[in-house]
Image 1 (tube, rainbow, N blue to C red):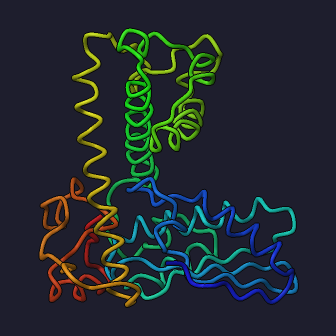
Image 2 (image 1 turned 120 degrees about the vertical axis):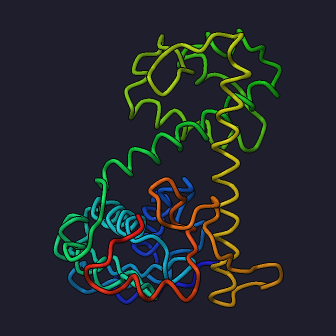
Length: 290
């Protein structure tokens, strides 16, 4: 889905390095790579090490806080390259692209970039919410992978990090998520030593074997919601940019989660407003539905 980059300086090696960094940038709601989702439009390298990354989203009105998070994460990821100079993420074809692009270019916070709007809760609070969902989705995939490999529930809930590292998972999704789950487990400080439990709750509590089925039902609900939103995002992006069949792709009048955009409990990057109501939200002073 992604379009070819336009290397001006540095050749394919540096372009490939940028793509590699971008592959690790996640859509905050879906926990999927923005490269895999087809969000990255173009990469341009400048003679002074400047890197411009153009990206787009499934709709003109995708939630601005998610767009800002992705732009910020793009900048952080590419700046880790030792040769990169100025890094400029550029959001295209979006109702708030000016605010997002200006904010990331000047190093502003989300609240500063959107100072003319009522932006509600902290962007870091939102980031934490979706990191928690990412943890849950990855954990479920690994647990199910172990079950399919013949592990019993008591063995799963008592395994430590060292044992998980040695575990052989052949289930494709479990295999894919195993290193990602380990990364987020360590990043959140839920397991830091080889002897620490590999499977705990978000609060670091042990999961009893008898409670694992109930625990998995909660994880399953998170995963289904994320997968549904991911499928909708891909379909809308294909339809918007004519990159695939439009059959069965229609923009609903309500959010994918069933909300209407007025509540912080709604979904985010797949949020769909009624077509006639979206432009009005662009006027300064109008509260954003974040």
